[in-house]
View (cartoon, rainbow, N blue to C red):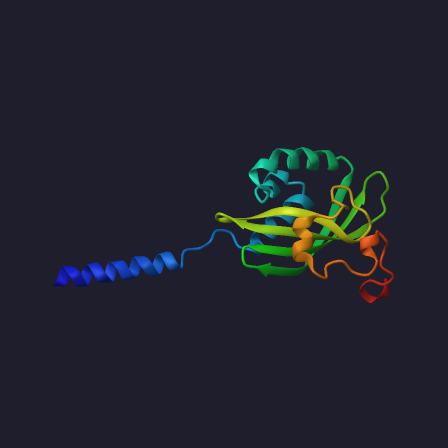
Length: 167
């Protein structure tokens, strides 16, 4: 009788522990790891958030871009999580060494929860200046989640007339 009670208690404890097992790194942790890695040119750290089949190409592209592109800041502006998918809008402040002009670009990043980790599966510019390394074409993975992500005439490639405080 006591053995049955102990067995039931152990089963309940194990079932409860499994039900509350962590899913791995949170979406925001993954977003920060990726964007910090890109900003500070720690591309191997950023690549951890890229699907395995795309990592080598990502590293090659980022190392080439780093010859001229500098990202001086980024800000996560909006996060829309929908189950195992998410859309994250990020405002990037950047310049090219060859030009020296500081610019702002907003990107929309598509994320998917794959196994125990969140992976970035698409990224494109939605507003601001064209930025090297960002896709300017329509990205179905981002468009599906973005909804109202494109602001003003940004879809046509034009700079919005007014931004934060009428800058």
